[in-house]
Amino acid sequence: MEGLFSFIIITLLIIIVPGPDFLIVMKNTINSSKMNGIVAALGITTGHILYSSLAIFGIIYILTSLYYVFLIIKILGACYLIYLGIQSIRSAHSTMNFSKEALADVRNVSYLTSYRQGFLSTSLNPKALLFYVSILPQFLSNGGIQVKSEVAVLSLSVVLVTCLWFLFCVFIFQYIKLLFSKPKFKVVFDYVVGIVLIGLSINLLLSKSS
Image (cartoon, rainbow, N blue to C red; front, side, top):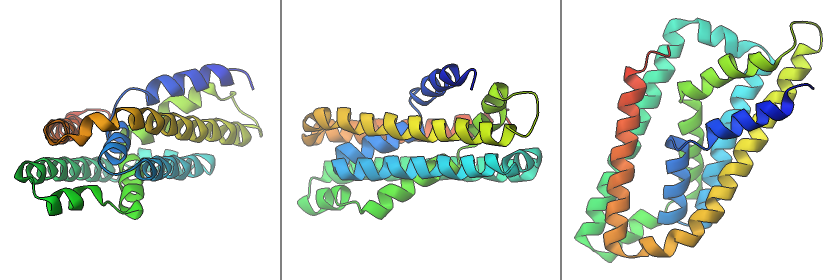
């Protein structure tokens, strides 16, 4: 398929820009464990599998044409980021209180929670939805029976690139994890992550991409 390599490069450049998914993988890896980070990455990948499936069957283009459906996804996504941001700030407060029980509560995150955070971060992100509507179609042929198979190939490329990138991030975050084992670093980290997530939610609500 012509342009597949260019599509993969563009997809990677878009994905590597730090956003909610990046922060969730980082937070799960550093605050909990390598496996939590991997599971969060798999949750993000599942979100892209969902959108890829909708793109292959053409449903995604119907959804984005319905203003209120898109608006609901946008609002829910912003609310979820605010929730995660508040949770991160609360985690910082728990660490400041310095009780071992509080630290244990912060770090003992279930794999299901990590997976859910990754999945919801992507599936409730309208920018991820728009990627399949605005970027992907530019690499399709003008028409014909092969369009559906082209969508499948491009969508699969997005899923693979996303999964490999965030698994690579987990590998990198493992090396800086020791730095955040100190309570002071962890407090700053949780505060920054919380503030950035809330900031991203506000930016999402104010964006005119809908």
